[in-house]
Image (cartoon, rainbow, N blue to C red; front, side, top):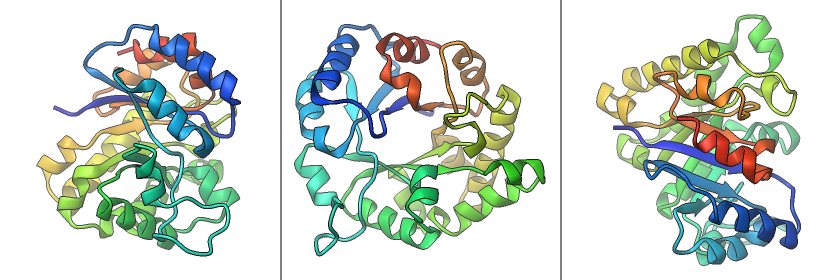
Amino acid sequence: MRNKIVAGNWKMNNSNSETNKLLNELIGSRFPSEIRVIVCPSFTQLGLVHEKLQNTNIDVASQNMHFADQGAFTGEISAKMIKSSGILTTILGHSERRSLFNETDEILINKVETAITENIEVIFCVGEELNDRKSKNHFKFVQSQLENSIFLLPKESWLNIIIAYEPVWAIGTGETASPDQAQEMHLFIRNLISEKYDGALADSISILYGGSVKPNNAFEIFAKPDVDGGLVGGASLNAEDFVKIVNAF
């Protein structure tokens, strides 16, 4: 049975005091025991958040990671640095990293391979822009993203892979893929994994939806058979909203 997961990507938000307030509210909340809950704070707060959430049922992930072990990469953070803060999960390939920081498929597969080597779990993001959706090129685009990155991995590396499908046109725009659109793409991705590797692996991989998930749409989206949870952006900064989303299964 696939893991049900809700991950909150805080992006570049929250001071230490704001983070402490949010964490206190989350720690005091009730989550279904069968749902894995993850929060993804900024790099400067990874240690703080990890320490605060010890002995809770909330995991912590980083928002990014460099592929090099060390070196002259000012402003970057390595796998070993992440692990030294107690973190064993990272987001890679987020659309904002791809578009704003020019992360290519080549860069991303290097990052993923480093993460796998370091036994760091990866939430790997894929998704199309609005022009790809309008031109009906969205399936081909997402397939290309997969084939040029994590489909280059051997089957055994997929033990540490979670996929997040994020239609870029629905991130921070208030637009959301319909539940049927989300299901259609999630099933497409799962079928690609089955064709590339095998059906058993495809059935075991959690695929999250990321694109303006809110309390008022989470239930319908999560009810789809191939949607295994969400990668939540803005709504994860509000404890009440995030708790409602987690409880939408």
